[in-house]
Image (tube, rainbow, N blue to C red):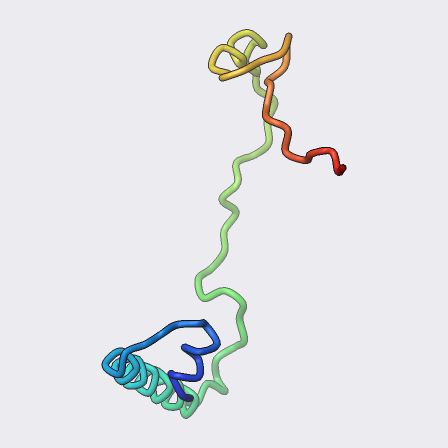
Amino acid sequence: MDVRYVARLARLDLSDEEAGLYQRQLDRLLEHVRRLQELDVSHVAPTAQVVPLTNVLRDDANRPSLEREQALAGAPAREGAFFKVPQIIGDEE
């Protein structure tokens, strides 16, 4: 793969030194991938995860929540009993 071609697609202006460095790095990476493809993995079961998955979520349990005034105490802006936030979607004109 030509580094200059990829750099052009990414709209990068590389010096000759940078292009040479990146080409050598890319060549080493692709050579490593080629060597990995030669490994016999027929005895390895296909997996989506490389480590065992465990349930890291706590049990869902009802707990008392904050009182309204306590929750709103740190709000930068409020309107009555509600948080006031900037409008995100404007009116199309």
